[in-house]
Length: 97
Ligand SMILES: [Zn+2]
Image 1 (cartoon, rainbow, N blue to C red):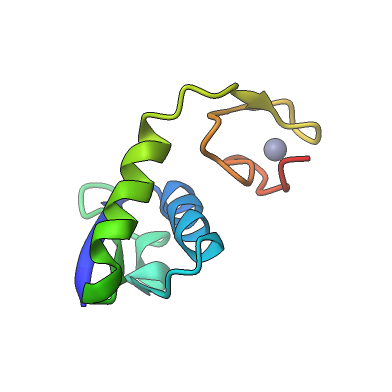
Image 2 (cartoon, rainbow, N blue to C red; image 1 turned 60 degrees about the horizontal axis):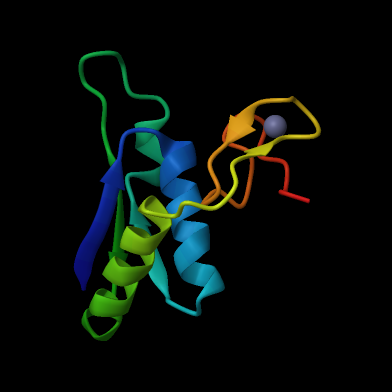
């Protein structure tokens, strides 16, 4: 397996995982449960790993999501702004409707 992504913000990491899974790529998260409880100064990044055969597709998906110039959206539940690549609100994890 290969690592395609890491982020200390677990909501951003989970958004990336959702993006990959919605495209049919099997993903494995590492540090999912330790990252959120990390003490300041010792933040642990969540890592997303995929099968070697999915690596190129996963990298392309994440790159295109990062460069997505689609419309940002405002969460109907908490009124926070979300970037277009997010499928769930970073703040309250509501689905984008
Ligand atoms: Zn929200």
